[in-house]
Image (cartoon, rainbow, N blue to C red; front, top):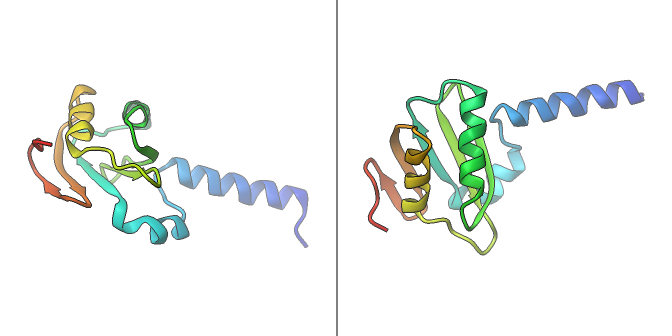
Length: 116
């Protein structure tokens, strides 16, 4: 029987997992072709991750940003009709003092700042 306490524990565990960079499975499957993935060398703590997420959320066309500090990765999901530019993502990340090793987008993979 699902008690209120068990429901609260399950909900809390799910939310904690999501804030630590894990994506809901159905979300990944539905949007896998449109994701933008940043690989960052100096994403050291949750404070850094939050700063990066807040900056990227301000870009046009961004729906969600998930980070994984342990892997040094940020995954950006665009809005249904949006597509944030690789150049804007790169520049925003660099402006926050993060070092990018690779940016994977639906339009290509970049290991240096994209032109567009």
